[in-house]
Image 1 (cartoon, rainbow, N blue to C red):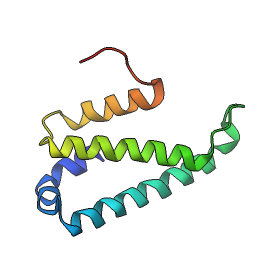
Image 2: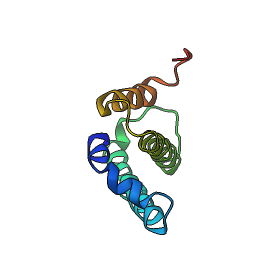
Image 3: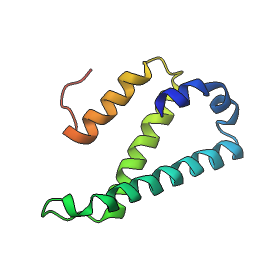
Image 4: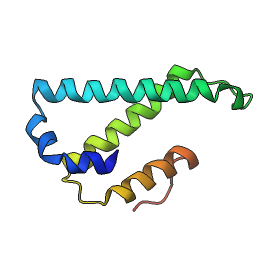
Length: 101
């Protein structure tokens, strides 16, 4: 997804701040939310005893992803998409890091 977004940086810049950009980002958020809901539902029986409502998880992860995506795009995609994806996955699966980079 980060590679795809980088490949369409000019489109993002043209839409950023416009009504079209708001609609596009909202649509992306909805698609990602739907995909994640489906994935979580498919793996519902594999969860631990700690219950966090599914919609909480969806909003948390998609919100974090969209924040990172827009931060990265607004910054001109200076970091390689593979690195951004790896950092996002690391924080998602391993938790927040304490070192300042």
